[in-house]
Length: 85
Image (cartoon, rainbow, N blue to C red; front, side, top):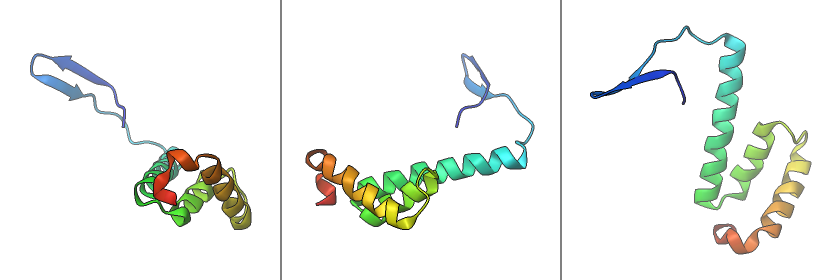
């Protein structure tokens, strides 16, 4: 996570910030979970986790659409994603 910091000869030093507003913290938590689920799906070759990531993203509104989109995307990139075979 990025944060303001200073740098000197002894290293980087974070600059303290006020806590994030609940709405912003919740939005960031969702985005971080999306990234984590996407990475796990790729590392494990898990279609199910990829579908979960599509749903977490929020652009896909139904489970059925997420499965169809996952199949289309994985099919289009098959040669680059051998772990999903």
